[in-house]
Length: 255
Image (cartoon, rainbow, N blue to C red):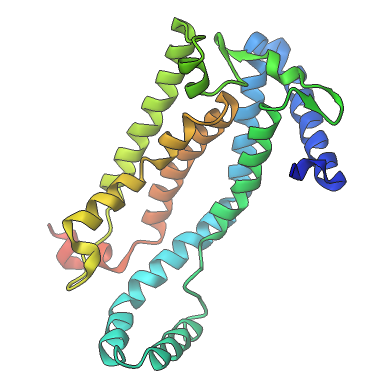
């Protein structure tokens, strides 16, 4: 079933198409042939700017969870044989701190519709019954409507396309590596998360965005590349503003 056959979603997709096409037209005098890609970048920056308050909330939630971690571990030790009591005490602790275990998850949920719409805009040959002109645009020779997998296995990969995709993927992998190193979780005593296998899995998760990017059209991959760079810079700035307790302790600071 096509969700965009539902009239309200079809109207939303058509409105997004009109806005992106209009922005691309407005940017054409300045950017020429890469105006459509420039429109995607500007839309991405606008979305990220609108989500700054949510990012601040996420950083505060991370700081709170880090501060509460020792008390949560104590509750788990004390009530490990009584799951219902453990759940009540855990939720009571979160309520006393005016937070919840799910605080800070909104950014992921908020950007998912944007990625979905961008993916759809550069995948469908028709939008609301009219031709999708966005598919005719490219970024330095790489078609915005084609994924890395499709150009490689479809035999349409040329030097320009591979250069654009290689640059984007290298950027996302570099950001993932910096994120892995800078935001490595603090070890927790007697935690199964400290096992070598789990540590490898957690490290590999930083690279999932780059893996996902090869499956979506270039326009959506461009959105992802700008997003991960913005997110890294924002997290580094917010970590300074809202340091984690361990990172702020004199013992750690003196190392």
